[in-house]
Length: 113
Image (cartoon, rainbow, N blue to C red):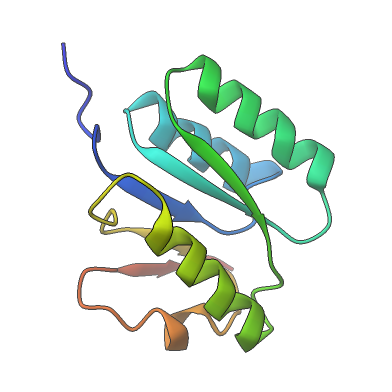
């Protein structure tokens, strides 16, 4: 049985711990390729990546401070270069400039907190 999100990709900010990590793994379980954004928790990001890969998902990690516009632009460019396409129409955001940089019609941003 094909997973519902197979062939799509999801960028999840703050994905190395807590709700972000759980969200990333939920997308991975449904077949999405995931981009795991982290700011400081590289070891935790690697653990999420390993778990996602064990679920059969492609998983990438990228360090970026989502309050820094230049780093967000780099994160977006990295996301665009990943193999899977198109970008999943959902995202995670927590008080960042991501909404301004990611002003794509295809992306609905849900603000947490």
